[in-house]
Image 1 (cartoon, rainbow, N blue to C red):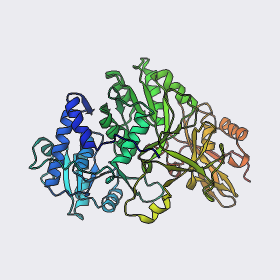
Image 2: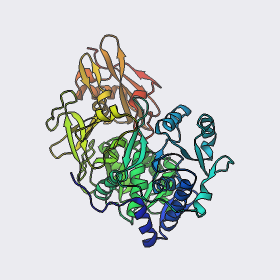
Image 3: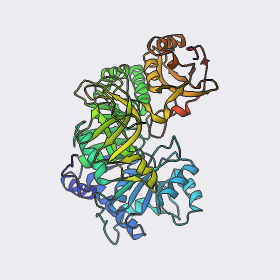
Length: 518
């Protein structure tokens, strides 16, 4: 397996940038921006002060913040203090946040005014927590800005090893309580080098427009670490509202845009409604699901950039496969394996390799794999076997090595003993005129065990349920045809922007006229 030379701790990279490009903007949000010179200075001060207030080597620090420059500074400062950063979804409920604080053993929480009441409630039962407050004031908390703008008694530790635990990122938890994925600097920075520099060509002159949540794995790898390592610039938006993205694209030039399929659909509508073009981008990256030809063609036509699909997970510290901007991009696929990684497809029951074109569980081996699940040795042993990570994802791979994710092992719909992949039905329904987005899941059935049902988000011109059923009957085996179609205004998403099939709403009107039942 490839070991990349030249991967250096973040502290070294920051000090080098402070000398080479001190006045270049590193990160900006709606309220402020920070240059590389100031980023190095502020994170060094924060790290020194955190240590002075009792943050020890290896202690965990929860980062409960929205999409701001302070979030990035918190990430980097914790690493420079030789501690472990724990990014938390800022939309977490009290129960979810309590679980992650307790599971990680966090001793510090860096948060902001909008989350202070929640943290105060939970702190009542956790008096060991030290709160660092950005964007607000509270006498019971340390001031983030004071720590970042005053000199500590001692500088940052800056000695966290490349192979020591550096971050714990929690999975979205759609199939149970969220698990903490432990990763290292080396693993995450390998992913930056192999995927985002090696395939996307991320470089110092890139300007990223970032509307996705910063707590998520992709943001951690590409926005925070990728931008920092390469010396690029990122503009952070508070969310992925189409109007906000459009205004930002027209205000300044950008080379790279990140988003989920639903954001791109809304953005394209907004651009075309305005009747005004936007400056061309170099590349658009989509996450959450592989896209079809219609979206890819529309993005290239309207935004002037190729739409790049990728596949990865929190456990792989970023992308494992990626389509190349300058290569043919087959709809529904998410590219080939990135340099330095290995990928296998195996029968999930027997473990034998499957032939090209056959469906199998995705196994991954790379320098970017997780160290393990925090405090869960049995689940770590089940997921990591002989150096291979079992993703739980099902996929096919064509003769050219392009991967097409078909679903999850646990999302299989088993109808009267027949296996049905939701993704196969979704791919057909997305070809139906007027279908904007769709999710398929299983519904319990007394006679058949489970039957497939589909939830459809229509486009502005409407859609035909009869045409959708006809397409399924034409292209799918009878037992795969949905027994009902439900129209809904939106599909439920996980915190990472992926469609949560198991939480698909039964909203709007249903059409039970589908395939025969056995």
